[in-house]
Length: 239
Image (tube, rainbow, N blue to C red):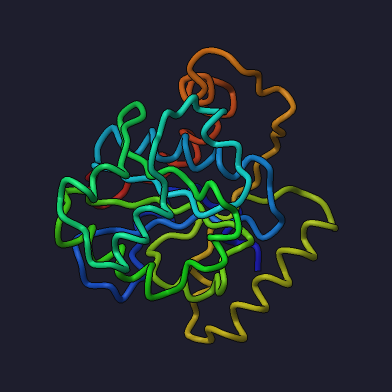
């Protein structure tokens, strides 16, 4: 049912659905309709949350244009970080070479080679979460999940909150319903109840190059829209 859509992000954000009894909170963002504003949504979400938390943003999407859009000079990406985790060469200095700063939060650049996303397995994901938990001071990780993830249901299962950018209209409702049905089939433990469908009546048409892209997004009508949704209800950590 669509009750999830009628609530603000804060209502879902303040609840904990995960069985991961750890200090690291995992927030997932995934658009079952492939919304073009998913990444801008996640970036604004990370920026807003970073006012009160130590946020790490990780992009697991293909062909995002991230580096150019946000004028990132990142030399290393999530592929380099994954390789180090597989080899066990994750000394602090090497590990943090793959983590960069943007505004108030940190980020790991997405795969430059989109084919590598399909090779990113659950074992890599869990090793990454474990390392972040044990060796960093981040308390929240925001994952941007794309269509190239091998098993999206398994990845989302690790998340305490799952935001799903969508659009209004019958065509998109059909896509959303198919996604929910898929989750109910492969994860019948009620994981679909964690989903927070967020209607984003925005397009990327008006995004222009030049200047600080993150600030442009945060201080735009789009950014105000996300902030209002997020703070509809308080989070227990902030109360």
